[in-house]
Image 1 (cartoon, rainbow, N blue to C red):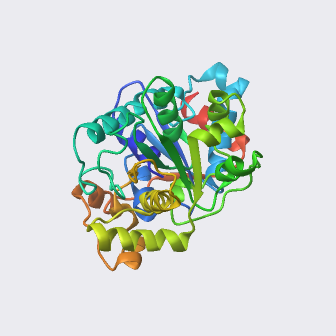
Image 2 (image 1 turned 90 degrees about the horizontal axis):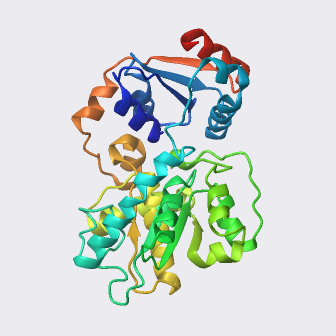
Length: 320
């Protein structure tokens, strides 16, 4: 939903590179789809009859397919690729430095539930709450922590796709088909980065739970979080960020938060989810011109089924 548009715009018009974006049909917002499908040129959007998990499965299968490997040079630009996580880890270093040195206005920063120098008093570092789907951003934060960044705790905030929070509670990871929610970019039933998290903690669920606290937020509570963030702080947030804000408030209320402060990582502009934001808050989010421009452009996408044969045939026909 969001990574795809970032990749599309970053590589649009670049010589020697073709971008192929797989997105689940009917499971992204109108504006998200427009961002994915209106560039054309070297950006090719494939609308998959399936879920995000189907798209991810197809991408991984394409990388392992001998016929494609002989003809094409493929790589991934989402968090399947470790290259996405390494620079992303430094956002945590920057945020921790801001929290240590000065009070950060939640409206200026990452739409934080409350940010006031979290963890600065005792050297334990801040608590980071990360809205999580494929768990790439959270894994990047855990890498930063392993490299030496002081972090008191991580909060993994998920929607109804709560496989990881359940694992942190009972030590059993049971992937399942993803459920459709308001926070659609987090609708992942089998996050690919969970394997990386397991590796960091040596497969020990208790060791992971000591560092990462899991919290699942329903759609109803997401709407409430959007409304309360607006009423309390005058900040409009998208549904993914709202999941983080709700989880942060719950963690603070639990009494486990060292200083009562949490840094919430925000994920998207509320204008991408105009109808959801309007319903939850009664406010119309202002749409930046670069986003409004997308809505005026025609959609360019090819529809495919959730099977490797169709994807393989299309890739070889276009690029082989």
